Length: 149
Image 1 (cartoon, rainbow, N blue to C red):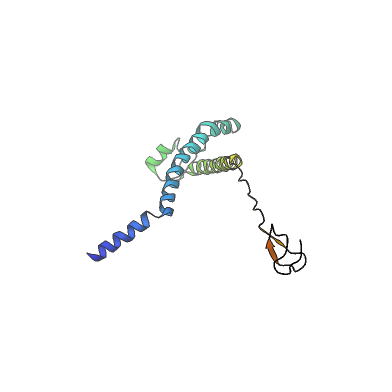
Image 2 (spheres, rainbow, N blue to C red; image 1 turned 90 degrees about the vertical axis):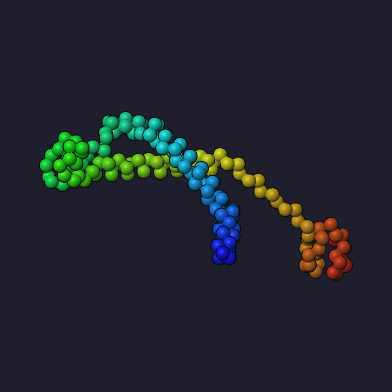
């Protein structure tokens, strides 16, 4: 029974650590961000890419393993296995476009972030020109060598 209590205590310490909570929030926000990026790629970027590629759809490209010619993937899959290289090409293009969109969005977000204002610390000491020791900034006489400043 004591081992169970210790295990539960350890789990509680692990679960409420800041890193686990931060990671959870990151995963949730990442899921929402993924929907935004997917919509941007599918609804905005891909139609533009379609204009430049003449509306080419690679997803229908395949090779039937038995060597026969079939009109569609579905027809070929009814008789034999297929190598759907067109789907692979489409997924690679989707990935590249999505990666480019995420890169551009992150660059934009970084640019929009306010730059932190650097706070310059006011010096609190100065160096005595005679004995070269640090003294208070407001001192008029060095406490070490008694020189007037």
